[in-house]
Structure formats: structure tokens, C-alpha cells
Amino acid sequence: MVQRTLTVQEIEDQWDTVVNTVESPTDAVIVEADGKPKVVVITYDRFKQTLDLEREREIRFAEARRRLEALAVSIGDRNSDLTPEEVEELATRPDREERERLATEGEIPHPTAG
Image 1 (cartoon, rainbow, N blue to C red):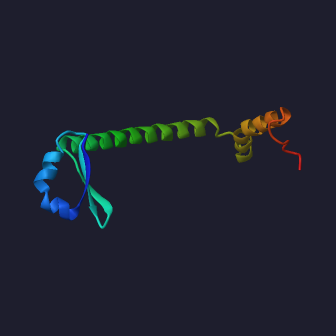
Image 2: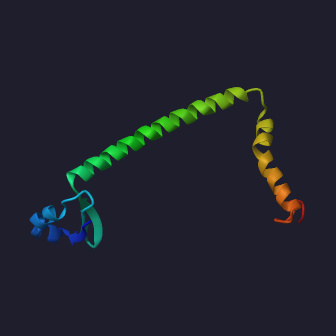
Image 3: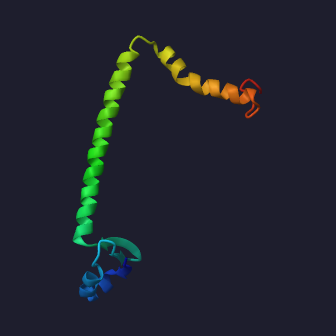
């Protein structure tokens, strides 16, 4: 794997060398301007692979979002008979019970201790 960092001026002066340096998908040349990285020169195959990975990630994200939305609807339908107070009680009970257990075992201060 070859990774080099060059300034914009060096790129202008050595473009042929840069193109020849980036031969394998693991090679890269980082181009700096004003001492800060601005662009990267990579092979076309690596660029295409990056685009494919981004598309795949977007598809997975969209599918995950769709599944979560369907789950939210399903959960909402199952609990439509609960009041907001009952929902809050069900949501906080495991945490409250675990804190009580830890306090009883002496792992944390008891919640009622002040």
C-alpha cells in the first residue's frame, strides 16, 4: 500500500508520477492545500467500490428504517389500550427494579437514602 501526501503545487508539478503511484486499490495520494488535506487520488476501482459500499449502506439503512417503522406501528397497535402513565410505568420498571436490586446488594447507594 502506497500512501503519500503532496501539496497542490507538487501535484501540478508531478501529475504523471502521482497517477503512476496510485496503481493498486490500496494506494492513495492525499493532496493538501494550505497544509490541510483537501482531496485524495485513488484508483477508479477503489472509487467504484466506495460508491458501491455507499449505495449498499443506503439500501440497508432504508430497510432498517422501514422495519423499525413497521415495528413501531406494531407495538403501538398492541399497546393502544394503555394510558400514557401505564406506558411510562412499563418503560421505567426494569430500570427501577435493577436499581433496587443493586442497592439491596450494596453495589450502589439505596435510592431512598439521602
